[in-house]
Length: 235
Length: 235
Image 1 (cartoon, each protein chain N blue to C red):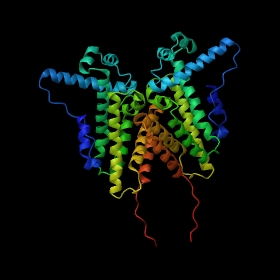
Image 2 (cartoon, chains in turn cyan, orange):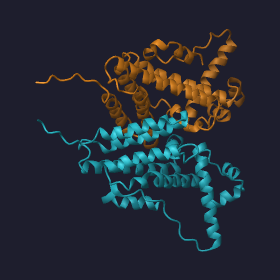
Image 3 (cartoon, rainbow over the protein chains, first blue to last red):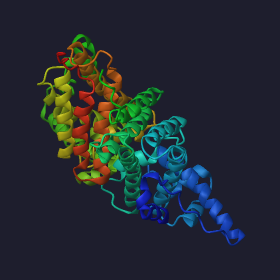
Image 4 (cartoon, rainbow over the protein chains, first blue to last red):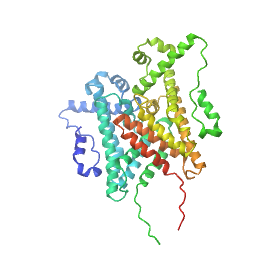
């Protein structure tokens, strides 16, 4: 949880702070540990795809071992429990989301421009089909509902962090004078997040490109409604 | 599939046509068949709740029998296969959605007023917690992705029917002169559907009432953007 805590600490500059990348592992001290870490990374890579198609519930040690053609004991050695594996899959998905969606948007200044860039990178990421079966973070909310535990707690932290990142950029846009002061940051974050969520849902169900076309229209449209435009002089 | 076909036939009046209720069973001819149908209905009632919490994938004959405290053979006798059970759960969920969301909105005239009513009844239905674990139709899209079969086909039909119902009412609003003629009915149906989908997602993950507050604001706001307002006279 270290990186999330680090993000929280930098409250003063939250809107321009990237969602911190997932914490680097300590440097390997010998070949055995290095091999162990490589195995863990390889398993996680497959686990993210398996969770994407089969859900976090379908992410069993044996299904994963079958998929990779390795003994179940190797998966057990790398991850102590199914819950441990689920938590790591959620954290890895978060890291992938940061790489594909958040980081590209950070080259734009905080506020309106960054929100525009965020929509563009999010749609590009969804359209690229990074995950075989759609975004794990989107599909896990209903799956983990009523299943308290570490995986659900991790998902709540990640999604709160994401919604806060969006809302913080709405706040920055208001502070910059780009959005009306009456704009509710959490309301708009809900709506913007919903556009990506719905694009993922629609594409999962119907395939094709229509979902991305709708979402690419809806995103800037949602932002435009809050813009402060320079008043035209009255003649 | 009969009721969906019936809806399709009445193309000329689609926007004012209710999503047809799930077809009535033929009248029972004897006590044995009546008991069989009652058992089937009781199993379906529990199956919908189980699918809501555990997903369509978690909807196994044995989990259902355990939940109900009946022998697995009784579930097997009522439903030939897991896929049969999944399809019937989706159809039952559709019928529940019609009762709670569509039917109340039909008392308003087709077009803008019906869209307003639809948003209100949808939020009321989500807030009432009709399903223990949220809407099965919302959560099934990602679960069934990459799993071709009768259940996925059924979900595609139901969701297409729903999106068409919304889009048809947008068309009616344009025809009534309530919405701008430039409004894209499928685009707005995507956006409106997304508001309910996101409310379901948000509530599943975070609990509380914030999701409904956001959605109740976003829905009429999305409609208002397309309204044709009477022009004020120039003085």
